[in-house]
Image 1 (cartoon, rainbow, N blue to C red):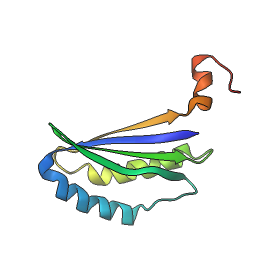
Image 2 (image 1 turned 135 degrees about the vertical axis):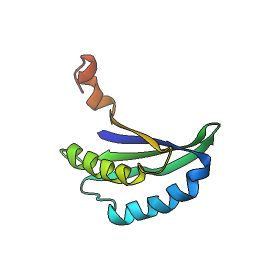
Image 3 (image 1 turned 90 degrees about the vertical axis):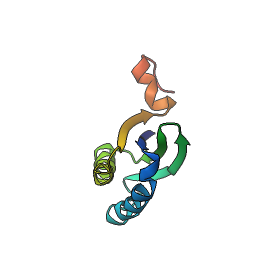
Image 4 (image 1 turned 60 degrees about the horizontal axis):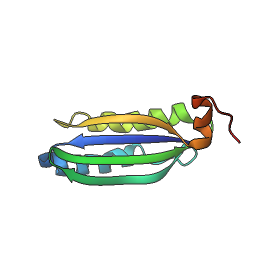
Length: 106
């Protein structure tokens, strides 16, 4: 299984703006379960420097590009918020990752 993990950070004072914009983003780019299924739709916590959020989606086989496009379209709508930062990671479960470390998957 392939996962997309998105981490994002923003200043405490921008939370209301980020929240309202997130609702607009999800209306414009709703979940498409034929591409990726939410595992963690959104988990947010406060840190000393600001807010930190994560999103995790499981990608359907052969749909990595489509899932990344959907994710980036969403993130680019949030990017204009002053101080908003994000990282998008592609992660593999243990079976998918085994060849990356020279092992054969069972």
